[in-house]
Image (cartoon, rainbow, N blue to C red):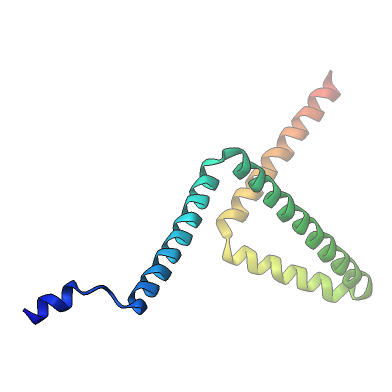
Length: 126
């Protein structure tokens, strides 16, 4: 009977404070989860966020391209032979790594050149 009386005793104050702390954590977690779900449902806000992120990525890409172009231009002006060799080496490595892509690109360029030549020939005959 002593076991039963221990089980039915009121919980100690430590247990109550731990339980209250756990309830507070659970409420906070639940509130955050509800906010996240509400954010996912708000299509306008998600679209705005996606657009804003795309703008930032685009601006960074433009800035990076400008920086690379300036650096490459400087290298080309100061060391034209070494820069040309480096570019050729990178193109060669890319060609070896992606031969199919290069073949398709070359084929498309050849087809485009053929179309341009035909159009010019037709204009000259007209």
